[in-house]
Length: 155
Picture 1 (cartoon, rainbow, N blue to C red):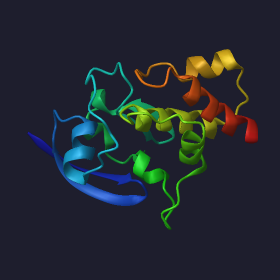
Picture 2 (picture 1 turned 45 degrees about the horizontal axis):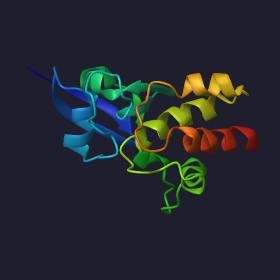
Picture 3 (picture 1 turned 180 degrees about the vertical axis):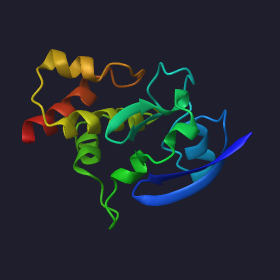
Picture 4 (picture 1 turned 60 degrees about the vertical axis):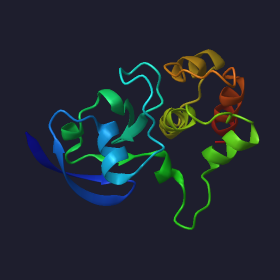
């Protein structure tokens, strides 16, 4: 069984027919070739598939594509400006060495975007908790924490 859905992905209006059992991860990767949305655990544990939906971060692997009907979705590809420049968030990850293999990076970027967009000051403990829900085997999280803290402090 399929359903036609309409949504906005990275600022562009989209229309696609999806299998009602398909995950948002599969729709974004297979129909729109947005490969920053990683397929990791596929059970909502690792955070590699995180996207922003109407301003809130979700694990797209456990979010059905049909639930995206009428929603605004942002992936890591949507962080890049129209002229191709990296966002301040992406640049902070580079500056702080928060990118190693890169597999978890897109999901971390989406969580960090949600945190920064909230505009609330966070203690170190609150920021660590807000960034939990991701698995990273390369950086030890410190560089990622520093990159996000840098942007929160810069506000």
